[in-house]
Amino acid sequence: MNPLLSAVSWLGAYVVVVTAPLFALLLGPVPPPGGFWWDFAMALGFAALAMMGVQFILTARFRRATMPFGIDIVYYVHRFLAIFALAIAALHYLIIRIDNPAALGTANPLDAPAHMSAGRAAIVLFVLLVASSLARRRFGIDYNLWRWTHALIATIAFGLALWHVVGTGYYIDTDWKQALWTGYGLFWIALIGHVRVVRPWLMLRKPYHVAGVRRERGDAYTLVLEPEGHGGMRFQPGQFAWLTLGASPFALKEHPFSIASSAARAGTIEFGIKAVGDFTRSVINVPPGQKAFLDGPYGAFSTDRHPRAPGYVFVAGGVGIAPIMGMLRTLADRGDRRPLVLFYGNRCWERTLYREEPDALAGRLNLRIIHILGEPPEGWDGERGLLTQAMLERHLPADRAQLHYFVCGPTAMTQSAEKWLAALGIRSAQIHSELFEWV
Image (cartoon, rainbow, N blue to C red; front, side):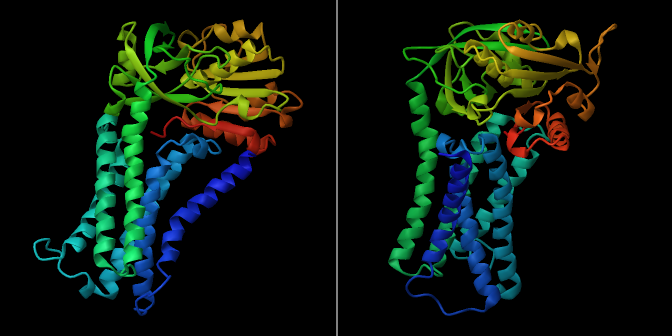
């Protein structure tokens, strides 16, 4: 399916899944109107619950659903919609508190009906979910601990919210409506079971082992995995996978890494990993033979998504070169002779990851490389400082408007590159970015 049509179809499906249960409430007998603000507050409550339910599917990593957008974009949307759904739930409560406080009753859980206390607890837990997610990086909350607690709290909060709706019985005071909303909630909870139980079980059936770890420049490593008893993973160059290393896939100790190896070579998988945290720093000490499990591939950041492009331009910063190396290696293995340009920014020459290989690949590709150094060595005659529009304009070919652009690196660099390319007349549909800071 055409990527645009596919994206529109999935967005339409999202709207249907969120709104269909709301329209179902209007079928059959309905309570008498309670005034605009009361009815508006009820609609907000049901809408918030429906949106919270769909949040589970946004993080379920269904490849067909995420492919039109890229899973990094889907996770950003998940985060935004969580904030929006929380705001709707809070507005639901505030309107009732102002318009009809008697309907809320006492807040004392010892005296209040259980379903009302469940609703209040759900809002508190949703606030905790959103706040902890937004503050995780700032306060250094352990990623694995956060994932476990996030999944647990989200499930409990959704169950409490569903209990509140069914217990209140407003608009769902018939058997079939209660069954509809109960089934709706159970479906999302079953989805969690699929993600946390079925998928890890499938991963157990296709294990990998560590074939080796190569030390690279700039506190980076290449982790090499080989499949055990199966043919490995088929992927598009530039995609990534979640890696579980030294643990069971049921442990939720997985980390996303870009695949740096060639998609044209079946079996072996290589990841380019920068040592920036406790897990990534420990990779160098992983012994050969260590069990590993992969969930993937994911991502829409790939030259294979745009096979008819007359050429490609790559803009990489630091370890952002990893998925681009996967694309370059694949193009070389396929004997592709289309024109390629690589802008590669780093702080210093000695710490440039994969420094020699792009030059070696240039002998097999129609590739031109522009290194950009923030702290160049003495006698450096290449580009220096940060990427600028002038640099792009100096080195891009005359037919630049026809090419496709792949940008991967620190957020500031990615945003700047997108801005400069747009200023040079490149259409947004031809600019493809991989976001690093989305987990």
